[in-house]
Image (cartoon, rainbow, N blue to C red):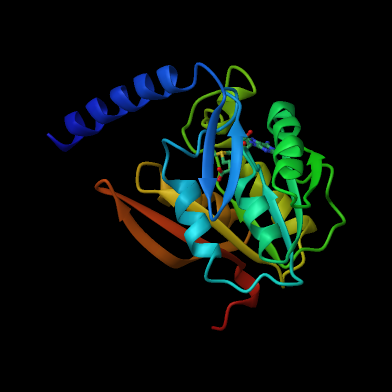
Length: 225
Ligand SMILES: C[S@@+](CC[C@H](N)C(=O)[O-])C[C@H]1O[C@@H](n2cnc3c(N)ncnc32)[C@H](O)[C@@H]1O
């Protein structure tokens, strides 16, 4: 029964997204307004972006360096910038970056934009915070728009991400990732373990009957025994 309700909800969500996103749409948070292109992840009809924004509102970001890995609309990057952080926003989707450039001017907020497949073009940078709202459905994305949702048939996005995190990332970074119970969290954790990374749950939030988690990703070797 629960599965049927979920499937029906997903059907209507997909239909709603399709109709809603026939043209660019606005999204606002804390007096920041962005115009979101139809080819970019929609924060309006999903809940993960808002949960991350509310979470970040509780963290002091003044004079901190923040990376939003896979920025989409960039509302999180702009919010971090408004809170006084130096912000680097990356995405594999050029349209997302073009729109974020316009949105950052529109809101008079500074964000450095870098086109990058995960850490490929940002390997030697130092960050205090890394914020990730990843694609997590196991399917091969057919185009760049679908990369906002699909992580590859065998979670290739996560395999590459965790490998890069271990190889290139300073262990003092605070890395936060949001995931929903709708995805294979346990399998993603197993992939992380293979790269010697562990997840600490820092937030659990139920919205419309779906549990969402923000995890802090840490190096296993630095964990107290
Ligand atoms: C779920 S959306 C989240 C967008 C935004 N961070 C938010 O919370 O609203 C995932 C984002 O990751 C980007 N993405 C997917 N694969 C990527 C990759 N390999 N490298 C960089 N960005 C990627 C997508 O284009 C999309 O913008």
